[in-house]
Image (cartoon, rainbow, N blue to C red):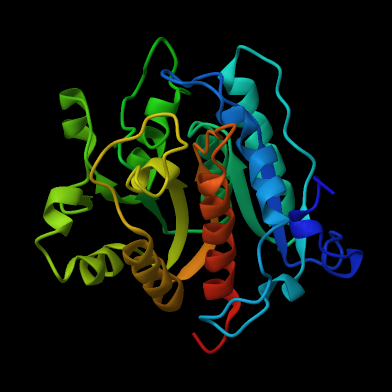
Length: 285
């Protein structure tokens, strides 16, 4: 079944029986290079049928916590504000049901609505933004809801810690939060960078991961690939520590742009999603 994560049984996939909710957002109207991330959620769910539900590292089967896949947020509109509002409403609805809310994109503009919802629920939140790009433009191509603006609103309200950055426009420099940005060229020369990330974050953390934070050698299927990205185990080392030390309240994974003949990035996205949940719920982490 394409509308249920990994085709898990109803015992672990109904809303009533689930601690975790996935909100799929197949939206890529604001994408400015290669479009196609609107197919990301479908590719993600398709690839999820091939994951082993036992995680070796944590010795845990997190699906038993229940994973409900919500209906796709399908916005057939040229107005990104409609998508942002719908994502906000849907995210808030599930947060108020005390679910652990995750989102699968779609381009990065979907994060604007979800971060708004989490910011209303939790005080003093911080955002861990893992991306090749800063996404700090106040407006781009006539819209403040463009994927290139996905973190600007958050940067004006919350602690924003950015990791993996290796591409930006000079106009964005003024919006960077001092000491809260970890460029890839600095990460390679600083063995303490993960500890510094942890220190910058508040207790409540929302994680936003753009697939292009990874090096294209392991995650080529994304809209704006950049050379020199994070590898798999370095990323997991960071995420494991964040989920151990902080109260992660939700996350999104965006910008998966599936290829027709190479499913490796689809599966990487599924594996990343499942690792995050395993780290979140494994009490012996």
